[in-house]
Length: 177
Image (cartoon, rainbow, N blue to C red):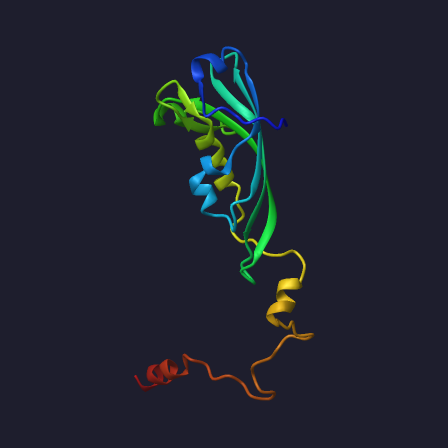
């Protein structure tokens, strides 16, 4: 992947006819929704996209996204560095009906005009590949917070006592009838 900045948008009439390849970095300030998910304003986002017109005339966008970002650890709430790595396989469609006719291995990307905003496409793909929960891989944040993992499972029932069945009252009512 190249170190150049990608253009703000591409003309879909040209990039697919030319089988264009776009590689480079995307600035975080062009991705406001993605930026809100991060712990800080530092990110290295690289893309490598191919625009191909297949034999059936379908406009395909394929490639690779990679981002090194800091997100908030869900245990200790400190920043943790993660790598987002995603394969892109999209088909450019004009409406929902056309999207419904796509092959299963393609995801639709709706574009009603000839101007394709690359930052919006990259932002959506990055949000989709974000993990649901992020935390430090090592136990450093557990130790810092004083978490203790018991050596043996903790039994909350005192030994020898049997918990009362919560439906025992209903059984007694049934016997009275």
